[in-house]
Amino acid sequence: MSDVIIRTARLEDAEGIGHVHVAAWQDSYRGIVPERLINAYTPTGRARRWSEILTAAQSGGGALVRVAEANGEILGFGCAGAQRDAHLAKIGYAGEVSALYLHSSARGRGLGRRLMRKLMADLLAQGHGSMALWVLKGNDRARAFYWAMGGMYLMDREDEERGVVLYDEAYGWSDLEAALAPSSDRASD
Image (tube, rainbow, N blue to C red; front, side, top):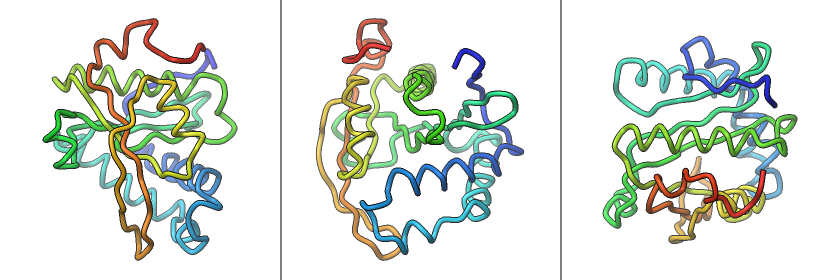
C-alpha cells in the first residue's frame, strides 16, 4: 500500500467517501444490525451527509476528515475532532475518532493502522492529548483492531439509529503521545 496517500478530504471527495462508507457498512455490519438499517444507507445519501461535514470542516467548524487514496480512488477515510460524548469528555477523553472505514479491498494491508495513526496525530496537533471512540459490540474485527492499536475498553452504551437500538463499546487512549510511539501497538505491521 505504498502507493496510497493519506490527505485532508476535499468537498469533491464526498461522493467517494459516500461509496466507501456504504460498502463498509454493508460488509462490516451485515448480520449485526437489521437489514432495513443496512439498506437505509445509500451512497447518494451518505455523500450528501459527508458534503455537509466537509463544508463544516472547511469553514473551521467541525472535525477533520482524512481520506486514503490510490490512483485517484478513495479506499478509506476517517474523521476526528473534539469529543462529542459528554461522559467520555468528563472522564478525560478529549478527542474522538468518529469514523474510520476502509473498503474491503483495502483491508489487511496496514492502511487502517496508517489512517488511525494519522488521526491520532491530528488530534494531538489540535491539543487533544487523549481520545475515545465507539464501536458496535458485534463488530469483532474492528474491536480487535482498536485493541491492537492500544485502545482500552471503557464502557458500554445503548444507542439508537433510525429506530433500531444498537449496543456500542467505547475504547480509549489516555495518552496519544505514548500511543504514537513506534512500539505502542499490540500487533506488528
